[in-house]
Structure formats: C-alpha cells, structure tokens
Length: 142
Image (cartoon, rainbow, N blue to C red; front, side, top):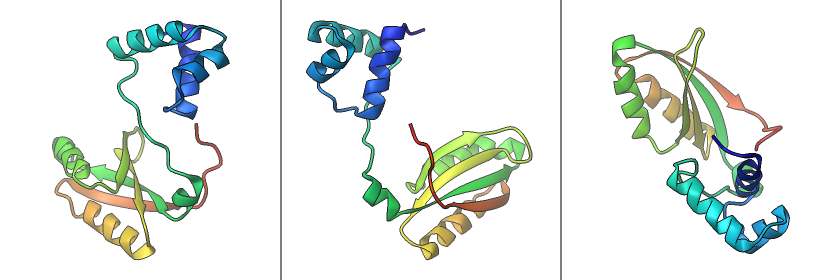
C-alpha cells in the first residue's frame, strides 16, 4: 500500500525515471533526504521493482506496433508464454478474459517484419488462433 506522497513520487518517476532527487524534491516540496528515504523504502518493499527507459516519440513513430490476440490450448498456456518471452519484439503480454486468452503487443520496423512476427507467434505450440490489429496511433500513454 502506498501513501499519497508515494503516489506523487511515483507519478514523477513515470514521467522521467532519471529525474534527480533534487528535481523530485523541488516538485514535491520536500527535502532530497525525504525523497531518498521514500525511494529506498519503496524499493525495499518491492513497490518500485526497477527503472526503465521511454523511447523518443520520433523513434517510436518509426516502429510499427500491433496487438496480437491469442487463443491457446489451456494446458499449454505456460508453454506459449515461455515461447513469447523468447521473442524480443513482444513488448508486453496480457492475460485477458473474453474470446481470447492473451494479448501480446509487438513492435517491428516494417510490415514484412510484423507479418513474420505474427506468423512466428501463430506457429508456437499451443497457439490455436491469432488475430492481429495494427496500432495506428497512441492517443494516451502514461
């Protein structure tokens, strides 16, 4: 469980995981020591599991992204997940309810590469059916 102060700190880190403690402290109106203590506590408790990068919009626009909806053989779902983990172009994988079992978000540099990825995913043992939708634009990303 986090406090409102922790949530504000996390929101700043979501904008820029490389923000300095001095910048975070200034934005929160607290001391650097307070920020360092909160960060250490959140890391120790596992609330913050790591830090990452966010690519520039220019670079992101050069990539094609798609949702691949997967229907799997129930007994092989772990095997399918393991196979998807081995494909670096699979950026995220969600388990979902409804007509499909999973949604993978994939990235590629070209339509041909995207097509090959979709075929590779569809060929994984345990995947019964896929449906791929190209992402045209991202309207909100936080």
